[in-house]
Length: 293
Image (cartoon, rainbow, N blue to C red; front, side, top):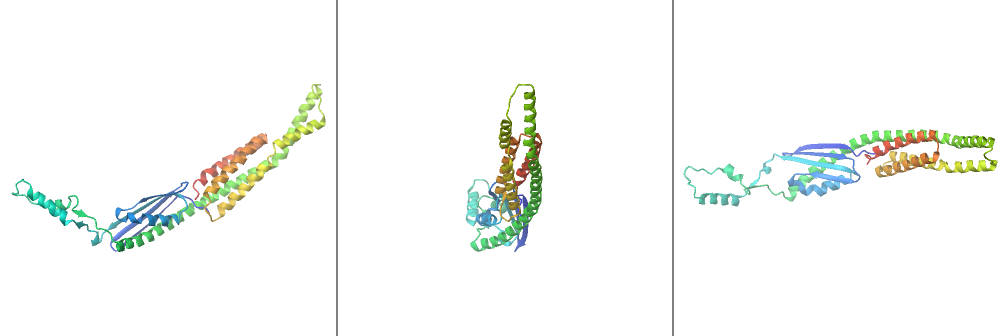
């Protein structure tokens, strides 16, 4: 089952006075590319989160966002008493008359360096990490579930396109013998006209040789066989469990190469029309496999 690279997953939890929310968004991308938005206090968790996501997601452009709100008493910032005292001493040394002047504590604590975030110890960080890892797994599960659902729809479309290509290729295969026969008849008719006018003398062996050269030049049986092989491989990969996006891209390019060769060698308008249909279907496949993991 192929997976789409487009998806979204989220998870949230309230634990010991702290509210967490994790969101993971993914878009198509050639490789695994991760962008993270973490609170400064939890920036140390970035490598842990990246390893966890790499183990779950093969490729794509991933955006990971973690937000949390700490409502517990431990969320209070520490007051730098030394800095606060230094501010007070400087204010007292000023020459401004102190008559009627009141020191506003609220204004003092807002000064730079007075209030500082509490340093997170190892034990507290590990507690946060355990919760964040659990939420990351939950959000990743929902992301993958959405990618799987979209991948299922992609798989149906891709296999349907492959089946249409097979049917069109069968029409071309049935037409091939008629191409040589039509050329033979046109050439014979032309030769007979020239012979009747006395403008040409041609042996039957020469006519047969010319038809044989044309038949060899416009033979597309090998290209049709390779196209069938690519379709078989494409179908197998689409139904398999491995990450198939890059291989499917390569196979779609190879199918287009065979279609172009068939169109250039066939020398037949009916086959050319069918080749145009095949190329249109391959273009749809190429567009869709860009979103396959």
